[in-house]
Image 1 (cartoon, one colour):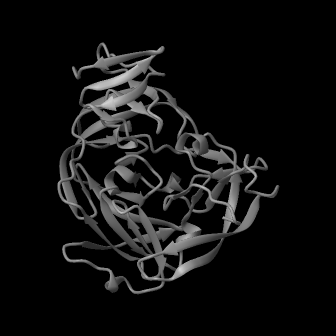
Image 2 (cartoon, rainbow, N blue to C red):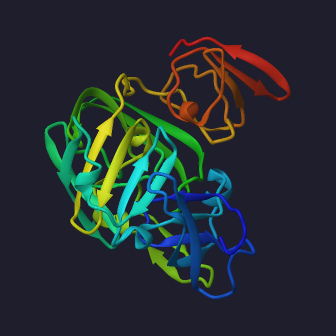
Image 3 (cartoon, rainbow, N blue to C red):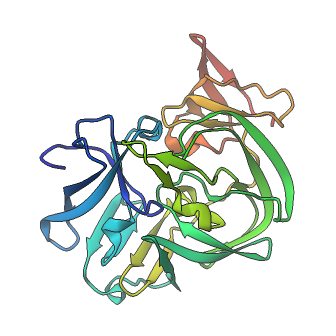
Length: 316
């Protein structure tokens, strides 16, 4: 970006593109104009230059996620956008949706509110409005699960500072009877209520309202990460195709991790929880820790605590 290589998050849940105001990427104004270079091998287009507006913001989210900014919905409007999560590619194109529709894919219509794509989902047989949020790390996140039938529930406490719209010192996980999202129906699945109604502050102190205030839920990366999502912002049509063999969580996690493996919150509802805030997870099930393990663990865990390596067997 502007001749520099930076790490950015493609975030459909953000109405505007947002950058870390503490870096030297931004001049000292509230709103900026940038030129983002995007390379698309699929269509042999070479380097394309895309102009977009961005907002400077002070937030812990940039350090926690390890990025300098988020590419928001104001970039996607007017384009067909292909998120190939297993292939780790994002493509913006002006071609037709039907050129990419693959056999077995679930086709759907969506609305766009302030650059954010929204659809209807069903949880426990009840309809909700949800945003499709590629910048959220949860499965399906709610602000409140109180009206949804559930079979188990647990509370987490710690420093949950990854939310761009504010810090929380607690959240909960809830096992629900069923969810129906993007043509898939799953029984006995664990959801989060970390999707809060927060506000944040721009670089100049201006208060910015979270557009998610008007939605019930967000569909996050843990739902999307094993498939291909295509959104045509021109026609408000899209399709979704999941790779086979994907398992959804059906148990409550004992802890939550940041991307670097540091435990930031523990399940206080779990009796004799052996994990501590500040522990750093090294391996899960004998394999090196990855961000995929940051939320869902039911296996042997090797961690570092006060300079000592410990192995904890699953008893939860």
